[in-house]
Length: 199
Image (cartoon, rainbow, N blue to C red; front, side, top):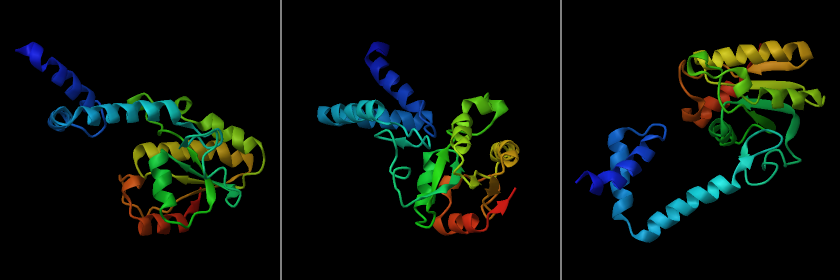
């Protein structure tokens, strides 16, 4: 009997590896996929493989994109002298939804978190410093969640950047403490950005 359920168990375990997916949800998703026509499973697996094969990191800002440079960095109308540093592409998308920010971005792909084994070397800080060394960046806006990890990362970056003569600001703390930027509504995020303060 166990052999019959082994493929279902393996599928469920794969869904369970996704962030925010518990065992019961993983089982539900596995059953759902199995109940769909074969074309659904084929299309689903092809979409995963296609995304993994074609999505890469922007050479400039480290955002995900399909080419060498993302659409923001490739836009000549954007203010290249102002760089907003964000944790992940999700925060970049949240900020873009405000429709107000006209600078460019830098995606760290995480926050400093010794408890999780994430050090500054695990983030794209070297790439940020390389961009700044080119000399055309005047302000770096740290748009990091007001959490212990976000605060630690912001302080670390401020200590690195300020001696370089760069204006370093952080979005205002209008966001609830301990919250994630990706869940903030556009109005709150826009106000926090406009009320940013120099570090």
